[in-house]
Image (cartoon, rainbow, N blue to C red; front, side, top):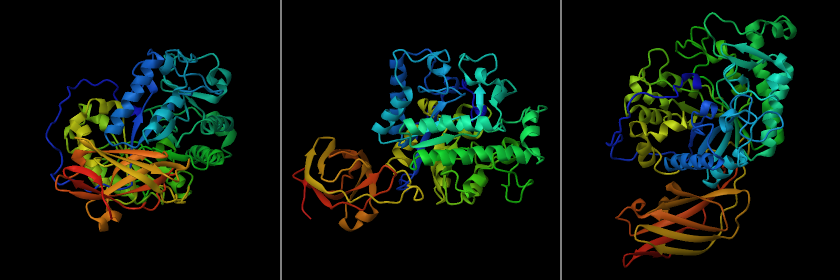
Length: 520
């Protein structure tokens, strides 16, 4: 992923104050995954420096969470294992140098960053996906901090240099077991909603250099073609991980964000009508379609970091291709918003590029949402996209789409007692007591509509964390001025994103200029 990113941007930021959307608010899906990648490698997104105090790290993470929640996001994909290191205490790998400046050194004052990130993310009703890199061992040979207990020191025979980086040898069976143990340990000890891998499997090809795995090939390949052998190595670790994750926690999702092109059509009639210089199948040896067909993964999030009309890899061509090749698993689209600051990407200077991409993906029922690379870009509000999201495309909250193959049980209908309405000058506060709140409930969705008969088609106005008592505040501007009454119902949403039927319907009416509970 980050091979495409320039960490530091030289172009000035131009803010656009005009609306990017038509006056009529476009329809928004009730279910939509809306996420941001938070890259920790080389301090791209968080923490901003490897020399921050623990308190400063926490403050930065809270600030970025609040930014993304305000923009309408409902999930965070945070990198916790960027280079065979850890943003959590691990028996397998040392603390990351990008956390404390020195690999193996714990935070001071001590805290568990992963536990902190999960807690703060869940407090906001958002999912936390733990992003791990399976094969990268040393980010820059000779330029990275390496602890004495690092696995490259303990088992140097497991690793291969390529370019300026050091990688696990994917063909080594001991490597596969080690990586599986590292991932399973996280699933066992932490309440992560998903394990997430990006596009780094075998490394991207370097012109004129062959990946130096000939020893493993001779030892393990048993005469099969080298390309097929390499693909089988990646296939086997994906299968191992899929089984291990589900055995440890059957509700934990497993997702992959591959490079945007599986194969070009000139190599395979099933490939996309593209001319990508490298592809998943032929260069990274990652057969993402096999993993989808075999149901080894729960979602794919291809990195479609190109614009509409790109002459080699057009966004419109690829999204159509991926929508036809999701095989019943969830499909999220990765957007390269960092390109708004890339001097070579003129199309991304267009304020309409991202809105048009969102509009396009919503045309496909197979596409369940978006992921943005990366978090830091939103801090500069490129092309006014923050306002575009929170005031238009993501103005109303969305539920994360459930995965029926993981769990399809609907929660019980919430039973509400003691509705209280408090009319403030700029908001309406409603207080409910939930008689049957359970630990399996993640949050409640609040629906309102001016017509009783339309409640089944009403939009979600608010999503609130579960509890015995709900405090729901609606900004006055969310209630159209012409409404003199509206109807309200809530639904329960489980930890696996399944939604209950609606509660009893409540009427809220305006009497003498004040909102009060009405009667049905």
